[in-house]
Image 1 (cartoon, rainbow, N blue to C red):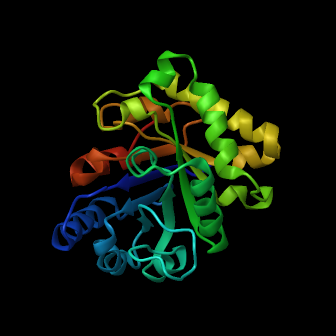
Image 2 (tube, rainbow, N blue to C red):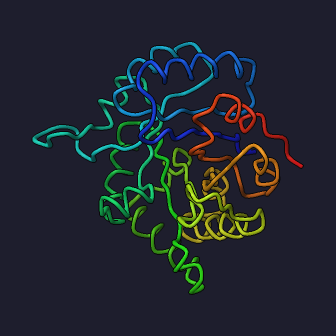
Length: 252
């Protein structure tokens, strides 16, 4: 049985003060929950204070990005080890915004996956197709290409530490959400791909999250699907009430 995970990606939002206010509200709202993983990904400037505020709680800290080197002349970048030092257990890599805005390709994202795993942290690897690719019936081809490129050379023994996030680009921040059936179809394909490449046991151990306009009014239906193990939440993670309701999903 895979343990559910709900992660909030705050993107470029929240000052340190605002972040701590939200964290304190979530700690109060969600303190008694023990059967699922709760994860928050604030901006870099808020990671250290949020990490301190989360100590001893049931909420884990996540970074939104990293650079795949342990150190060196890489001005402005942050390594997995430095993120671990402020309390991160998880690091998001390959988000569509990193791909589309900053030009990151699968090979570079794959280096990040390996660097995060080497640091004994959990990479949250994002994959997903654009609207143009979906309308051209290329969804499965895109997912397979991204998975092959980002996981090339990965030791199958570390796969249980990998978390995948299926984020159809056409549903991120648009208000559009894949239906439960659409999301499940993609998640099932991803798990089948992992089984073919690494074996059934490893495929069954990997958690696959759905991301793309997850809200309190659609999370229950999404989480009822057999291959959806959680959610990577964007805008709805910025409001304590909305995010708490998503964390408290009930399978319908």
